[in-house]
Image (cartoon, rainbow, N blue to C red):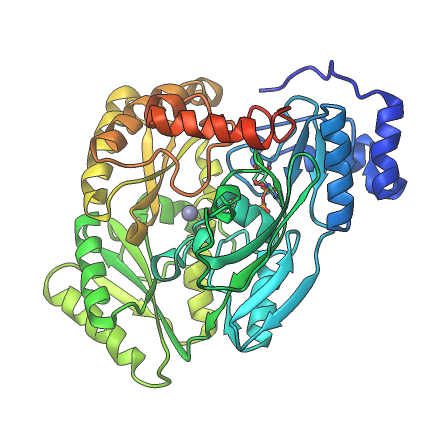
Length: 474
Ligand code: FAD
Ligand code: ZN
């Protein structure tokens, strides 16, 4: 997936870009550039004449003005944790790293807002909110590295979306540098603002193809006064779904995470995740990691016990452990967080990130399993993820002993059979990771043609010279 670096940047133009940020922050040394050029799983390797690290919106604006005037393409990058290749310069573009725009501008506990720059990591934003006794309710396993700008640009989901929604629902306002360098200031704290088109939501989820997000006003919520975490073994994904319904009815919005995992994946975590132990005595076909939160100090433990007891009585749950300490809760979460990463030990892994209506998840899993095992006999489906959002990370490991490269070469074939099931249930081929380059060529076959046409028109309007993350999404 690599282009030859034939489009060399003219040295005098490179010097003009470098002058905007200062030589120290215009990285051309290959070793220093390396971390910006490769994606975490090694699926994409890019190259770039220079990695620019501006420290202010003014510098970003000047870079884009110059890029636009000279038709020089730019790839924006935050924490480089994206999973669809969107942040990698695959055609020798300039990398525009936002990670020095890292100021928390304000926490307003009365308005329940946090205003920060794009390069602030999700973890820092959450810590700043907590310091003001508030919760920033976005939670991704990559929180230590991913940035607010990246979260908004990918419209990230994560493990708290079941209760709090996805990135789009957290942003009240944003500041964006347009392709021509103009700064769109939409940094308002307003819940209500009906003064025309919702421009903010054009840039959220645009994966850096329409503008550069430089800052955002994020919505905060009260911190829960109690949290309970349980790890449960369940007989099937159908049972997991019924258990979710019991928990939802019992808590009215208090289910803050509901993740499902298969036994095969748990075994990999136990084998390769250092210090991980099986929370339950016997193995079970499926597992649920359930978190409940409440604004009451007392009583949530009883609610969790009641939900699990009802599940047991109805045969929806086989065994469960409720975390007795913060450490035990973290140990449960660690299993979930390692679930995807340890799959590399099972050889090649083809990864899908799909969504279907919540009620259709069990049927989707059953039919997708049948389709991929018919296509590649012996392959091992390892579905897991955010059941409560209808969002399944449908991963497929290679057959034992198969050739890894040969297996990965069938990624397109697997897409085809899995997406056919997604389509049958009215789902989406990208639930939370985005389109990037991985799904760009598939998009036209699944997206409404009128929607696609409007997307292309917006791209031409906002980026007439095609300098912003070219070749991504569209
Ligand atoms: P990057 O990877 O740097 O960039 C992502 C995209 O946004 C690229 O297209 C880039 O060009 C663009 N971009 C970045 N910053 C800006 C900006 N300021 N302005 C304009 N465009 C910009 N994702 C989920 O949704 N849910 C999960 O549960 C989840 N779990 C993950 C777990 C792990 C262990 C890992 C490694 C990743 C996970 N991800 C998840 C994917 C990833 O963390 C998210 O997509 C995240 O939002 C990316 O943020 P980032 O700062 O790393 O962005
Ligand atoms: Zn996810």
